[in-house]
Image 1 (spheres, rainbow, N blue to C red):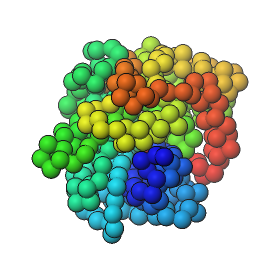
Image 2: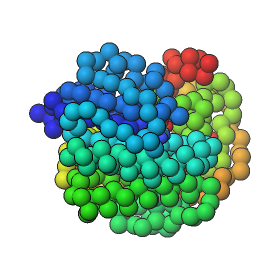
Image 3: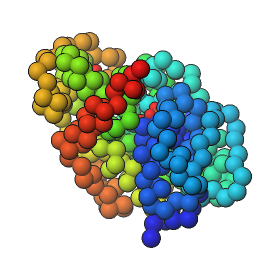
Length: 321
Ligand code: NAD
Ligand code: UDP
């Protein structure tokens, strides 16, 4: 039986891409009461429409940078609230810093008061433009503290510090997931991230916009693998950060070719300037997750892309309207 059976779980950012998949996974694991808290700044209630038919599910429209409380027991708090795509956080620099700082503290306060396990959604961006490759959790990172990505990177680094301070000061059972690039259904077609951007372009027959020369690398994890890892991490006793990502690394140019092959479209590539501080390489070392959680990604890129593309084919008109 899973550690979530009969439990109450709060997911901040629950109406977002990852949050909504996480909630569905927790429901399947037997959670009794599920609360999605979200101010819908980048998420949408459509993502939790199916969940809302479940008994025990509640959506609370709330900005987590404002204090909050909930009646009754809470067993787990997953803190996912934050703009996550480079375009989204560039458009909301102050909101991004506030949600990582005040928002994380409010969520930690809830966990402290309720005696709940707290899991922070951190990111591979804490490694910045990494000088160590692949990235292990022991690497402290290479972040430009004043560049355009710093509002996200530093808010997530501050959040990690805050989480550890709550653990050391109050004994809150905390977990930190360093999430690497994740993709799947329910990403926003216009969020600027490379997966929806390329899929949208390919389905329209437009050329794919490769930033820079396309030699920068990323490693893409399918969302069902990620949420399985998040649930395992929350149930572990691992306070140290854990990388969650798929180590299969490819250049963005190779990724563009994979999208062209998967969509069967003939449009070419166009090259656009590389955004400032765009990391040149990224691949998780997942030894810790494998050893401590018994977790390894299972969905190959080809299969994950097939599912994602099918979803965009069925939903893109409605979602871009
Ligand atoms: P998303 O934008 O789809 O989801 C984020 C959710 O947080 C949205 O629903 C948004 O409305 C909500 N939110 C933002 N500010 C809020 C606030 N002040 N109060 C309440 N809700 C707020 O992004 P995602 O890809 O689902 O990312 C979820 C989490 O995972 C984020 O914390 C992100 O940093 C982290 N993460 C994601 C990835 C990835 O590849 N998807 C990689 C690394 C880390
Ligand atoms: N990218 C690209 N074309 C796009 C969008 C992104 O070539 O239309 C590149 C981007 O420069 C980066 C990689 O794809 O090198 C991943 O970008 P994304 O925004 O998805 O995530 P992140 O940079 O946060 O890893």
